[in-house]
Length: 253
Image (cartoon, rainbow, N blue to C red; front, side):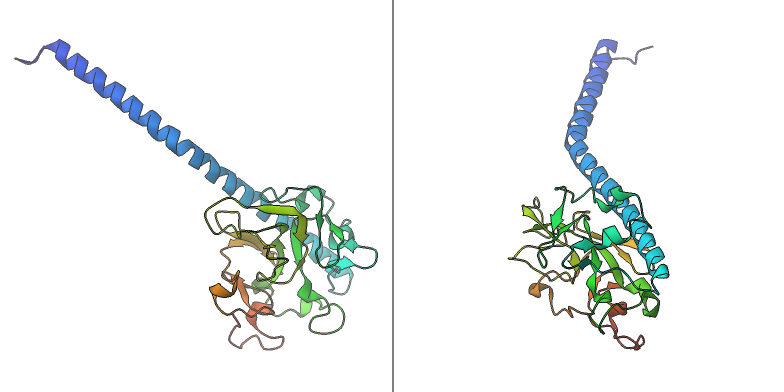
């Protein structure tokens, strides 16, 4: 029964307008939110895939080191240009894990330091070779493997780290293969993009993979120890930021 003084037709019209207005509002919000939601889902999916790839590659490198007295393969061997991905093929046969869905834009990349073509979107920490002594540094001698980068995302050079708003601008078919540190530059281009919502995926020498917000990309980010310094989170270029045989010292940022 209708309330006195409130025609049922007026109430029906009001209800219809409310329903229509609500539908229009929902449609507008959905149209605005959907691209952002899809972009977030893609970023998250790429991040998860990249971390999974890093896990598998680290496991392959660890298996390789067990058969070679703790030594890791050279990032690239000259003059043959045989890279580490070819060395571990018998330990990691899933070649698709060499491709990072967030940064793969070419069939092959080129290492600017050697001009050798490479087969990975991930860079191997070159400090394990000819840095602290002649020849390889055995993986089992590393005191703080959980705080030492083993592999980081690489890919084609970009003029943008990914931390700033705006699209990444890729230049040519170059890449960074031998991981040195996040301040490395080749003709002003950045080798280590942070495309996962401004974060970089990497795997530590103990095999655990994470994504971190890089703390040093340029001099304006502050002083940075390029040999030992922190990349982001609890991950450093080497041995938790400490020199070998001195794990209790304060870390070098």
